[in-house]
View 1: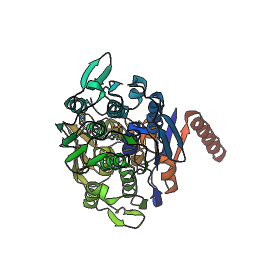
View 2 (view 1 turned 90 degrees about the horizontal axis):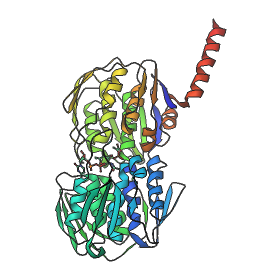
View 3 (view 1 turned 180 degrees about the horizontal axis):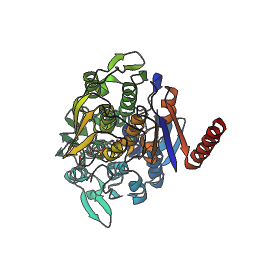
View 4 (view 1 turned 45 degrees about the vertical axis):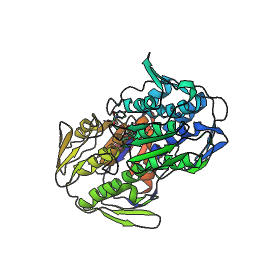
Length: 438
Ligand SMILES: CC(=O)N[C@H]1[C@@H](OP(=O)(O)OP(=O)(O)OC[C@H]2O[C@@H](n3ccc(=O)[nH]c3=O)[C@H](O)[C@@H]2O)O[C@H](CO)[C@@H](O)[C@@H]1O
Ligand SMILES: C=C(OP(=O)(O)O)C(=O)O
């Protein structure tokens, strides 16, 4: 078993570079399936396990996929299969994003039902409502969702989402690009990753307008072509390093961070006493000697992102006073609270809120990551906890962070990643050294 071992107490300083965004690259790679002609070249792609998974899904569907030097190339010009099996969807829910492309391209798609995950039940009813409005027949059975367009082609429609779901906005947008007529999609998600996907689709020859606002219009075209695209920087990875700087009272330049993508996070951290300086290359973050408590409510963009909730919890545990975090996006995204308690955090759950009395006297402990952001948050807590923190279940971390421990070490953190055998060895070595010194 692999673990990350952190010894708390070091102040971070220096420069860290942000990767391309996981949540932008997954839908963009799914969209490459829409091109029946030409090759797509996607740059600034992070080497995350989720990227390897979506590439495998595309290969299974008969696309030719390469991944080298942070660049993914996709040739989807051959005839595609229509089915994404459970082995991929189980590994990564975002595999359902191939459904819109397959339905548009083939007139039929069969994708394993994703089911729930560690942060909630996560239904996809809004995706399916959109496909149905565009004329598809949708059937659910035997663990699969099957959608079929009449005579192989969807038609444009007016669709209002009950909630601005990121995945539903992306899936319906992709499906509508090759539909007959115009689709008007209302109450859509406004995340920067939606805008990135729309930009890529337009480079492929699609006619998408309004991404980043509450209404998106998609005029269907007959054919789409492979295109070249650079993925936007990962605002959640950037935010995680902003918290790392702040929690340690450090001074870190987060290179590549786009402040306009992080306005709610920066505003809240400023309220806590953190200083931000916009520089040409990114955002410099300077942590105060004492952090102030604040209240936070997660919301769809441009509200406070749920994907920063657990990292912010780590920061608030270290702040002076009472803080409240309310989670409104996911029904069950507080699994990490029990792990924080193992580190002596003074935190309690009340319905959809968590109440913290800070600063907690945080202590190193062995803790398990419950999802990818919880993995990062526990490591951040380890940076200021007294003693040694060991974080397990790193498969979650690898879904969303490239070389997280190496990047923190380069900023001065005392952190390493070991397999259990390595750790036994170093413990033995330490015992020998202690014996020799005795
Ligand atoms: C790969 C990716 O981009 N993942 C992000 C995406 O996930 P994802 O696209 O799954 O998130 P959604 O915005 O769709 O989900 C938000 C909420 O809406 C609910 N819902 C969603 C769809 C639906 O048809 N019915 C329904 O009830 C979900 O259960 C959840 O409670 O946006 C989330 C919200 O910003 C982020 O936390 C994830 O990191
Ligand atoms: C919840 C997340 O991702 P996913 O939707 O891929 O599970 C995340 O990135 O924090």
